[in-house]
Image 1 (tube, rainbow, N blue to C red):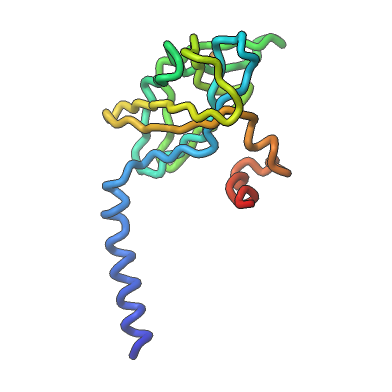
Image 2 (cartoon, rainbow, N blue to C red):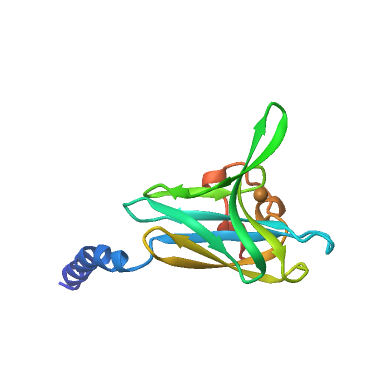
Length: 165
Ligand SMILES: [Cu+2]
């Protein structure tokens, strides 16, 4: 008798959950960090993982931060053995997918920092998407969280589990 009631409740929850999820923001940002640089340097890069839990693609159209005079979406790539950096007008996060901003690839360039950044500082970064929504990211100044954790070769599943301590 009790078990039947419990199953009934669980089923009701299953039906309700998608409706709630819809109202939430579909974009989830994790592992946001800003590269720590010598104080003389006025430009640095921010990295993060942008995940889209929604069933529609989301397009990142602009970035900004109160910590920098300007912020741009950049892509680093190898061109005949030379590292090249290009500014992107937008960055598409596929439905049910994610885009990893990491060293040597996509990043957010923070140009003309308003003050020198030191390790442990929190840098707010605003990501504006074409849906009209803005996501605030709090990035920590420091080193790549993946590099400091033991093993990140399995990129898909890496992350949170080892970071509780
Ligand atoms: Cu750049």
